[in-house]
Image 1 (cartoon, rainbow, N blue to C red):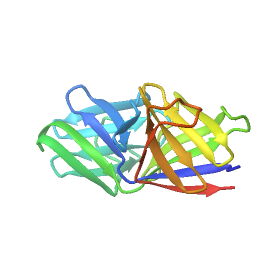
Image 2: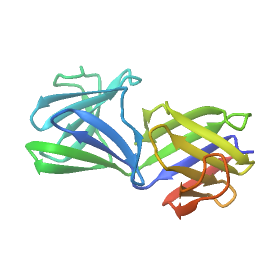
Image 3: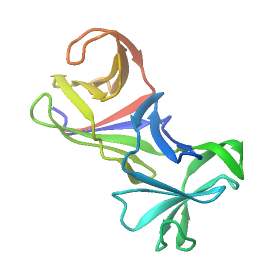
Image 4: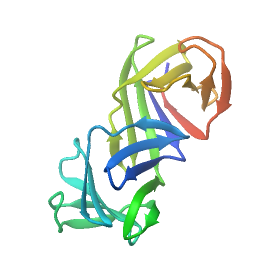
Length: 198
């Protein structure tokens, strides 16, 4: 049985509503997190600071005017200053770059880390990581092991579908019309690469 799974998310992005300062983490068209553990501050109409509560010594800064994002260390959240390091993300802006309605951070390197427990319905660890930083600690997720190589994975709030992970084929499917924890349903192959540690 796998000790750890890595699901490489080729289409992952973080969406920010620039007015309400609300975030969503999305991959393959499915919301992975509503980012309840995040803070977002608008320091200028085009400048945003964002931080997960688990981040202690850094935060991200997004400049929608220049369409650039940075990791900032040694600075104070919500204030200028600190050492900037460019993030390898694509910043897409909806509205005017200096006064956006929303923006998207499209990641070049995002993945889920999953550690199944010994029991079929036990989840030891689930994290979503992008650009080397943990964006979500996997609250509100369920897992079910059907066979040593076959898992169902679902986030609370997903209605009528879940993901199926086949570690033997190294594939992930979106399943509709099935029952979580049972075989069956209509499957759609997702563009997710799977790495397995035994």
